[in-house]
Length: 319
Image 1 (cartoon, one colour):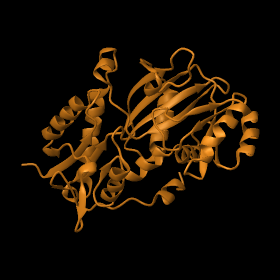
Image 2 (cartoon, one colour):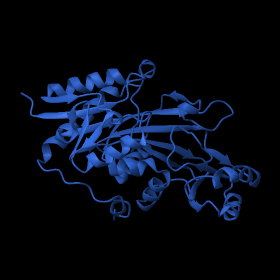
Image 3 (tube, one colour):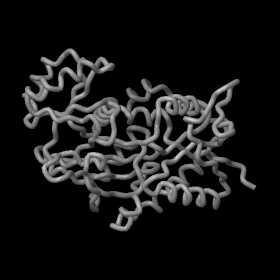
Image 4 (spheres, one colour):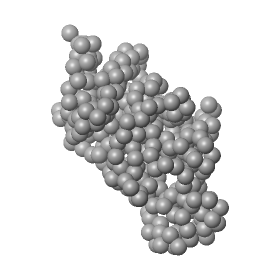
């Protein structure tokens, strides 16, 4: 009879339903029960408990949340609460850190990991930004700090582009905006999947002809890539620095400085879709096994769960 129960909320499109079935089967083989479909948008909290589909979430041994496309502020709010009471994967602190591009880049830089040169600016400091853009040989890129899939990213390679973007920036609710130096590259990238500080798989994405964004939602295409020691080592260091148990690290080769640069660290990197598996991406089963190992260790290592330190303590922690 199983003594542990794990709650799961996982994306179902793009083969996610099949991945979930395999995950449930592998956990069952280790005498770990699962409850799927725990979408926190359907949850309510009352009298010291959070209930989702009739399940008291605090009584779970662990909550595995793996759904980027349907995440809402309400779900994230409850996710944060649960992380204080039971183990979560990814842990909420690291998940939220990597949702913010500025904080991620800042932390990686402090750990000696190369990212594009960046600036976080007050949205009324646009005159200062003009000098920065001129100083960067190939211009810069405006990025929402919490965007994903390439949405809202705009290249700024001259003062005219910045002037056109200025009205939008000044209407933002946030008091700041984030820009990075544009990295001269071949318009392709590496995605390195990491689970539990271990390399799991590698593939790449390439931008459409005449474009520079490699994101799939921006028209990019998945390509097979052979990893090398440098990209794998850099990705492992980046994942460890952020504290993510599961990470997808995106890198490009900086042709000007002849080195690999981390663009983003993603807390919910998708598994290969059925079409991508047919083209040769074969890391899904390996990733599932590593996740099952991770879950088993997390729910058995401590009977008492201790909430993580604050984000501030984590962000400025010594290496």
